[in-house]
Length: 273
Image 1 (cartoon, rainbow, N blue to C red):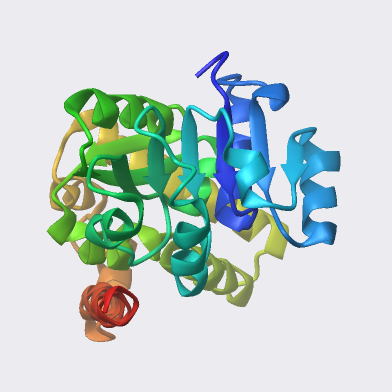
Image 2: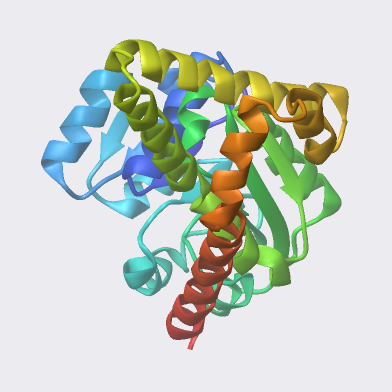
């Protein structure tokens, strides 16, 4: 990434999360990042905080950029694609993170000969712990996919998938941080209810979540196997697990992912029609 001009069309929260992650990891420097952001207050914020160059118009921003990240809301992406269609070249790599927008829709505006990548990152990218999936479209090549994968690997992990899985990814990892935040909040409240100071309860919950996730990742063991290691006969853990199962936590989480996926499909059909 170093030395390459990177343009973000749209300076919203996800664009900021990626910019912050890239700069924190030293993947690139502020002088190689430009942002197109029509809202002056938002543009001033990004310029002052991250020292990146901000333009109010898309044509000025994308000129000379080797990578262009489309980070606008789905409702306005057609307008943006119309505006830049005559300006984008086959030398530029176009990465869309607009939720629900297919590569075929983007290609219908920019042309099938363009190098197009669709990606779905999530907000932990801003601390270098993002989870991103991506797929190719237009005339993208394996090299384009690998370059984009390297880009998102620098701020977490990334996985190349088929585009048909994108709605499921949205329901799982795209919306997933909100599920986890809710669980952290609920467990912290549980700690407070049994007498712990809130700061102590939250610190314990956070480290327990981090440590448990790393155990699954680093041991390669199935979660049920690790769960059984903590669960003694007649002990406290099995008592707590029984209450969770009785109240349907497993079904609730599965249903949440399913519902969010279905909603993503509905929105995708609307935005791509």
